[in-house]
Length: 257
Ligand SMILES: *[C@@H]1O[C@H](CO)[C@@H](O)[C@H](O)[C@H]1NC(C)=O
Ligand SMILES: *[C@@H]1O[C@H](CO)[C@@H](O)[C@H](O)[C@H]1NC(C)=O
Ligand SMILES: *[C@@H]1O[C@H](CO)[C@@H](O)[C@H](O)[C@H]1NC(C)=O
Image (cartoon, rainbow, N blue to C red; front, side):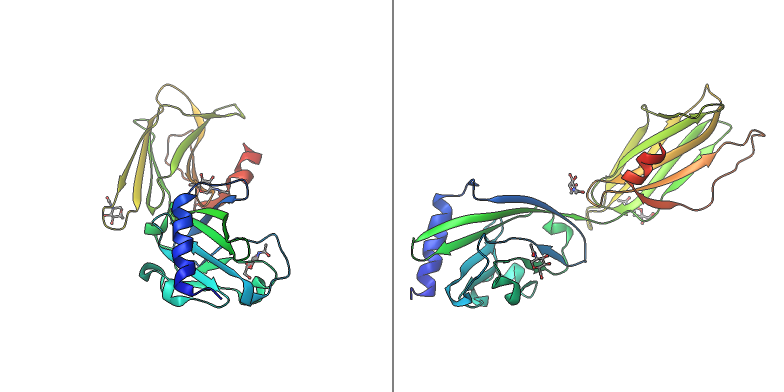
C-alpha cells in the first residue's frame, strides 16, 4: 500500500495539474440556512464499494481539506477550519454515496466551492467527480409596510437577512383585478460590517391614482421564500392595514397573481 503521505502529495500535484472541471464532474448548487447542518452530496457511479479500497477527499477552493478517506478516515489531513464540522456516512459509502455533512454553515461559508476527488490506485488517476457551490442564507423574518394615504407614499422594510433581498411592489387599481408591478421604487440595502446581514428599505410614490390595495414583496433568492404584506386602501381615507404577515413560496404567490 502506498504511504498516506505519498498519496496526498500525488493528490495535491494532480489537483494543481488538472484544476478544471471535466465531463466527469457533477456540478451542483446547494442552498442552506445558516446554523442548519447541510449535506453536501456526491456519489460514485459504482454501487458496491469495499471501504478499504476507497480513497477520496473533499476540499474547498482554497484547497483546505474538509474530509479525507483512504481506507479509513484520515482526520490528520483535515484543515483546521473544518475540524469537528464534517461528518461522513460510512454505511452509505459502501453504496458509493460519499456525501458529507457540514455542521453549522456560516455566512463566511457562502459561495464556497467544494470539490471531491477520487483516487484510482490501479490507474494512478485522480478524478474530480463533484463540484458543489454552497449558498448560505439567513431568512428574513419580518416585513413592515407603512403607507401614508395623505402623501400617497409607502415604505417597506425588512431587517437582518442574507443575501440582499429583491423587493418588488404590486398595485391594484380600484375596479381592476390586475396587479401592476411598480417599477420606480427606490430601494436601498445596508449591510452590517460585523454580521454581514442586510437591512433593506424600499419607498414608492403612488400619487395620481385610485387604488384598492398595495403589496410589498421581499424575496430571498437563496431560500426561495417571499415575505409579503398587503395594505388595503380605505375609501374613506382611513388607515386600514391587513393584519399580520405571511410567508409563502413564490410559486404559490404566482398562482394568485
Ligand atoms: C447520501 O447519504 C446522505 C446521508 O445519509 C443522504 O442524505 C443522501 O440523500 C444520500 N444520497 C443519495 C443519492 O442516496
Ligand atoms: C438593521 O436593523 C436592526 C434592527 O432595526 C438594527 O439593530 C441594526 O443596527 C441595523 N443594521 C444596520 C447595518 O443598519
Ligand atoms: C440558490 O441560491 C442561489 C444564490 O442566491 C440562487 O441563485 C438559486 O436560484 C438558489 N437555488 C434554488 C433552488 O433556490
